[in-house]
Length: 178
Image (cartoon, rainbow, N blue to C red; front, side, top):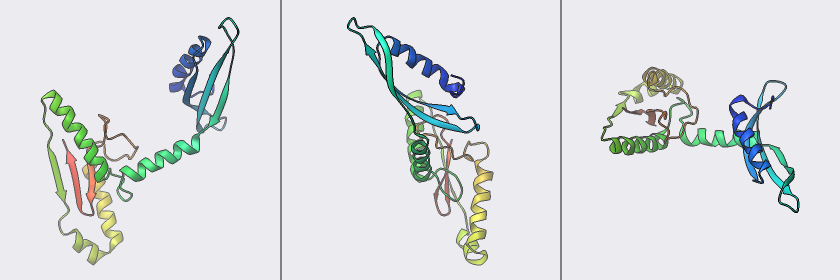
């Protein structure tokens, strides 16, 4: 268990314990490699029983699935976040807003939505160039995102209570829900 990522140790112990009672399991957990890097493994374990139904051994496989996990994380990143600003995109915002509306509706609460239009953004783009316009959007995203949990594109699920509340909806439109 020394190489198992600390937060994953309990679920691995529980799975191994269940195998002792004849239950098979499939489990994904992280392993800390000797170089300090973290890999993700998938373990499949199947107990082998004797004629009396007692577990005599457990057999299975352990596979490094780090590349698959990284690819899934990248796909989520591409699907839900704006490449330029790192803010959630329109799809993420829509899903997170729907989830927030349902949550607040069930509590009898309310949500407010603020739509922000960057005035004269086209003029900035035409006179100063695309690089300058991109920088304006990046700075704006950081400044407006402070305090709303929007600066880190960590792939949070839109249904998560911690889902970002600010998003880039189009070239010069941002959205925020409170």
